[in-house]
Length: 198
Image 1: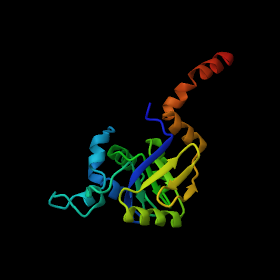
Image 2: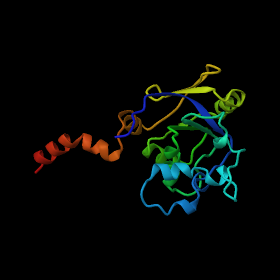
Image 3: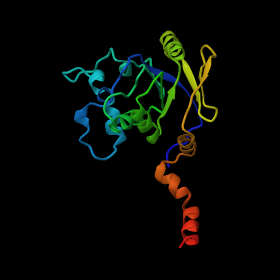
Image 4: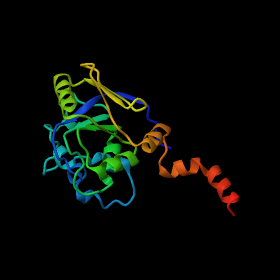
């Protein structure tokens, strides 16, 4: 069982780039691993942006800026485009992000995030710009994501927006259940049905 979702309030890491694809999230050379090792994938999140070709730290990249932090990634439009690799969601979760806010997600990547207990929150482009502006002005700016109420709030300005989520996925996130856990939670009902229809 994973950590249950309810309300997240956190500072944010801004990535104001559009069309960030899954190869940029986790480069293909790290896909050789066949098991999900969150630490391994998290350490290599945005690898080619975090490090220079000679292996030295790229101090200009946001993840290497100690003034930013938190468990919410705020990303530009069309986040997670490209290939359908689930490893990209593994890397985001492995780094410690619990939610990603963007004005648009690639559908497959959005589902991969949900399946890996990362909450993708889709907001309007105007609200996204306001978040980037607030975070840029105050690196400690906090955002509140209320999953039960399906609302995201910019605590600096007091503005909020509602967001959509599949009801089944919402239930699973709030209960800390993956798809197998969900089925097992209904084991008695399934067994009763099977006995009644022998």
